[in-house]
Image (cartoon, rainbow, N blue to C red; front, top):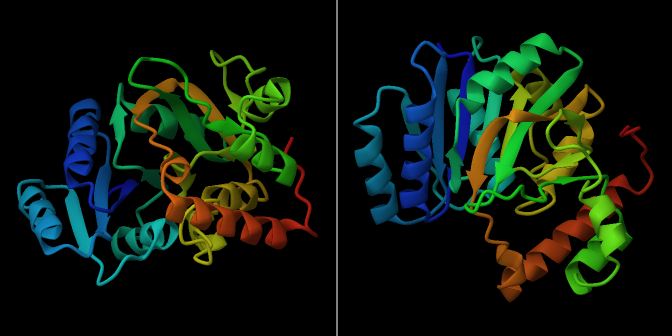
Length: 264
């Protein structure tokens, strides 16, 4: 079986999911051993059938249709449960709105094989216009999350520090909190940690996972792996998603209030 398993959780985004997979297939050499597993959370038969039709045409893509919306973290955990096996060395979590710009899998895999001290590697994420996304952050604090949410145009120096704007993005560096839109994690570490904490239905599950990953080895940004992410920031536009984000933040800070991991 494959050394690299890519997980995509689909929620009514089949067109983007199919486009993301197309970019993976186009940019990843066949000699690289990889499989793609889709978990469909849509609760929509038309969406599921569209994915089934696509998967039937692909040799290395599998689909699991969930009976209900599992959420982001539990959806990725399901992909790992359903599609990983003893040959899986790396588990890759990507959003449906990711488009590869080069052989991201090969670059990240080579980096982790060379640098055993890291548990996870993340690529350079770009906007469709080519700007670097603010997807790399220092450890979240209540203050930083509050300022980002409610006063995004104030305290710009603090916000820039939190989003690691002081770093040299042409070189690798350690990331305390990498956005969960694209992570390559060592499969044995992911399994040992139990994957995402399923108490988080959506939002902050990536911050929580990164914090636990650091106990097994740092997370590292790798600039030579490049992908575009069409980041929509749904919780800034939808009151239900905003409340869900707020609920997840409360869970996160309650969970980590009395624990310390050195994220340096």
